[in-house]
Length: 163
Image (cartoon, rainbow, N blue to C red; front, side, top):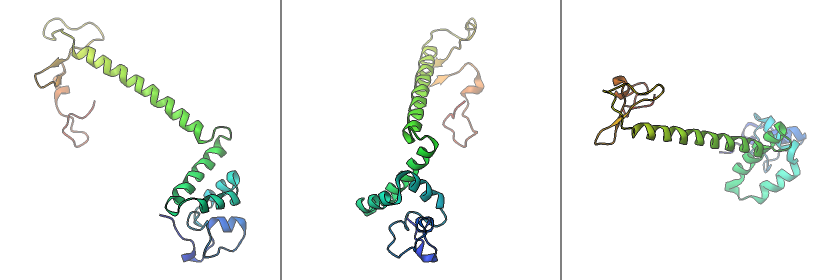
């Protein structure tokens, strides 16, 4: 929720930075509280106070806080990376998600390959680097190490947890 700087009689961060009196109807006060001066400084440096004021007035009142927070995020990202801003961060995260998805797909493929293997762990041991898994009629996978089949209690859940 937006905070009001007028209840404490201190000027909002914008008015303090712009060295002007913070009026009761100040457009910046609900979104730039006095305890967050850097938020306004960054937004002002990238977008300018006039543009931010116009944007706040053009956005529906219930969307203003989100709009200002978005401007603050973009301003901080632009200061860190003047060329790409938050798009650069988004791009890096998207590449990371794709890499992790490929890794997860490869692990799932390995699990399926190992789970459908027809080798019997009671016969000869599997070749180096391979493990034999067994299914029962319920579709659960039982691992060759008996301790792996026990529920994992480390996280307070008894759903099998993770290794």
